[in-house]
Image (cartoon, rainbow, N blue to C red; front, side, top):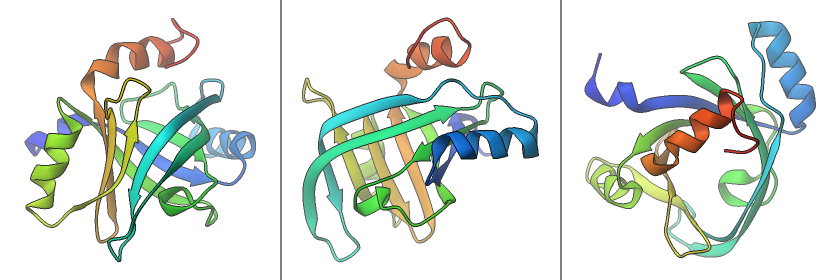
Amino acid sequence: MPRAMNKIYHIGFAVPRLEEAMEEYSKIFGITFRAPVSRNYHMVEQRSEDGRVYNGPFDGRFTYSVEGPVHIELIEVSGEGIWSPLGERFHHFGMWSVDPLLQAQKLESVGFRWEARLHSDDGSVPIVFVRKKHIRVELLNETRRPNFLDWVEGRRGTP
């Protein structure tokens, strides 16, 4: 197995209606999901394919399969850019990263481009999305892994 593959912990799918998708995926794949979570980032930088950079908030709802890894993430999308509602579809691979910004820069050297950077209230950037053709990767700071595992395993109310 290639070394990087051991860091993929989820595959994300954009869905128009979260609860309906949870029910359908559960029936098809025999998996269960955590209760949906709402998340807001006040500052998100996005870069379009033509290089235009624009800022705005992210308000979204998501859930993960309890079974995994590799977990299935369902994201109820709305807004613009990478969260524009285009129906149900593959959205991204999720990977843990020691430094998402640095890893995004390294991936740019092999043809990826950063697509979105989510800023926390403290100014840090815990999540960066990069893309190369039809491959989108979410790089999530590994410092969030313990909270995520506690949540997905039912020991915590939110990730």
